[in-house]
Length: 403
Ligand SMILES: C[S@@+](CC[C@H](N)C(=O)[O-])C[C@H]1O[C@@H](n2cnc3c(N)ncnc32)[C@H](O)[C@@H]1O
Image 1 (spheres, rainbow, N blue to C red):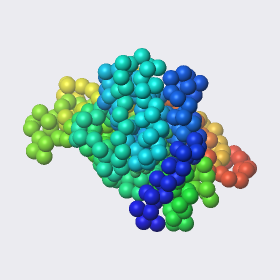
Image 2 (cartoon, helix red, strand yellow):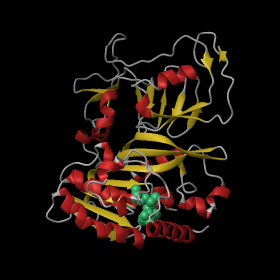
Image 3 (cartoon, rainbow, N blue to C red):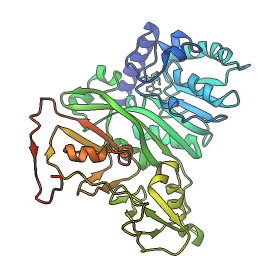
Image 4 (tube, protein in one colour):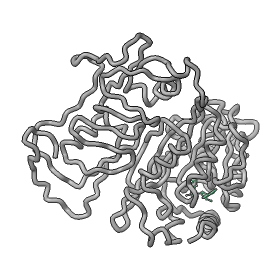
């Protein structure tokens, strides 16, 4: 299928959904009863998301928010509620029938929110060529749309262009635990159902980071469906656009102090390809300091201006986070762990090497480790077994390590 033919069939699919008041996908996580108190039913019945990107405390008062692929506008109206009347919300969609329902509802929503006029506007356009000025948006949201675009790299480049420096995105989308096979890639019906265009999580993360976004991390994930052994998940991610360092950095930009990884990983490689070993101080430049001071990194690092390069935290330093598996046999249950947050690569204390977006098989002992509050934010764990498993306990390593 050509890109144009995919786009045409996606428009037809969602035009028909708008005309018939149909949900192609059933979003999870909205409080529909509450939303019905201020959003018209015509909008709610065509909600077609796969997450709740605005319901996650992501929208701040007064912000300019852009919803890419807004459909009937459900998330735009929620964003409008969170920004308050002084904020501004722009919804972009390529399907006229969706935009019509959204536009017809905005006055009623504004009245219900007590605003003298609506702060939401809807623009027709493509995610690949957003009708928005450069660097004018604080927050981009998008709900189950990027998978429908044939050129995802272009979509993320456009999002990056539209965001201000310091801006961020929160996107819910469908991803897969492997590359989509050709017979699904050429299945028109399943493109429209948000499946065929889903990227392998590894490629999804890579595409976002290659655009320039950093601090890319998971803020929600859940199962979506399985086709012929390909597992689809609904993933909500956030990432940031930070200032690009000059090509000839000044001394001040080259050195911004020291940082040390507290854990829980033994070592990590960050999005600038730099290694941090747990407990070992290293110097950092300005761009790394800016990165590591972003909220999602803060629990995992300590900072210092004193000269501590190469020095180590003491073994009993209470800041160190180290989580070892129980010394018990392993049970293989079909579980696979995918690292989705913050780091490109990392190793735990049990010889597991994690690469962003790539599932690796884990046993029950490792599952217990990765589901602790310290590790859980970094992982998506999924059961790939399609048959019942016998679940026999095994001891794979003489020293009690995992297999
Ligand atoms: C699955 S629906 C989600 C709609 C809305 N975000 C929601 O949560 O209800 C996908 C929407 O994205 C729009 N869309 C898909 N691909 C697009 C693209 N490349 N550019 C602009 N809009 C697109 C469709 O027209 C449709 O309204």
